[in-house]
Image (cartoon, rainbow, N blue to C red; front, side, top):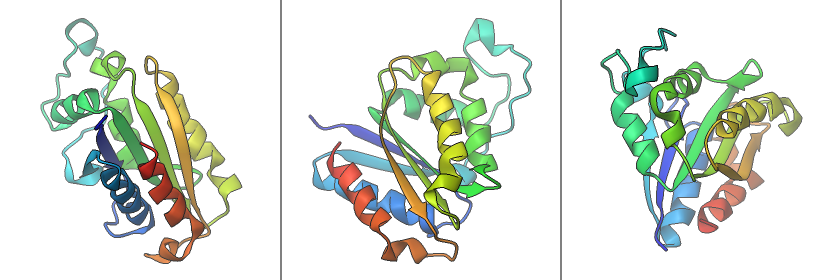
Length: 177
């Protein structure tokens, strides 16, 4: 069955390490007959959550930015990829802001498969806090299943990940969809 894959690239650095892993996963997914769309979270206007909870009764945020459109894409996808560089042992701000803003409709992001991608100058162990935070988000979603985690470890400079095993891991993850 052809699946709709939504790749949410959290890095503000296009062509960076986590972005290259996104591209490899997409290549594998497309070779397996799936469709894929990559969204650079930084390119979308997404303001931080105000914690006003006006969305509780309406399912709609009072803020009029791009998040409502992104939520539709998340709800419509079969597979969601969350990709982020690791900043101070956590996901970057763009990814966290986007996750927080799913509040109005997060219960509709259900029955999804997820792949998590993280890149860091440190080793995989140093990325566990980040992966735990991303899993924390998926744990809040009905019937979400994390199908795989790709660690781009030991990469700092733009493009360094291209010479690592993580590229093969990302491609294989895409093929497995």
